[in-house]
Image (cartoon, rainbow, N blue to C red; front, side, top):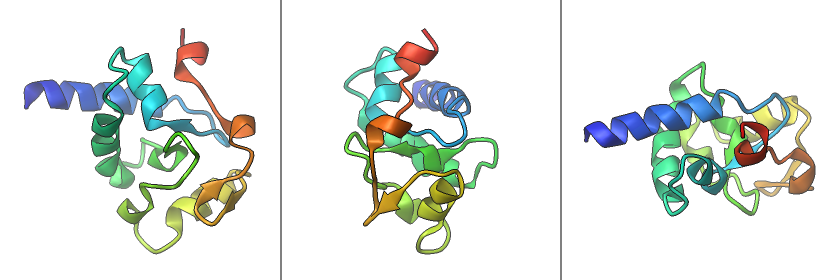
Length: 110
């Protein structure tokens, strides 16, 4: 369990660095942390981050740009509303032009 907590903290550290108006994926965070096959674990970490004000969990989506974590936010469309308030275009729970908004921690954080 201790390892999970440490991993979750590392996930939150990366998520805190996602710039305003940009998104990344569970898999991109996992790859950056050297755990490429752990995208699902990143998802579990983000499940609890929706209520953490300092972790912009709304900026983490699946590899296709789908808002798969939206049910962890209060209200029906809060995740989408937060993204749209940052200028990210979302249609039918999917980010449009994902490549335009995608932030790769592997490239950006080295």
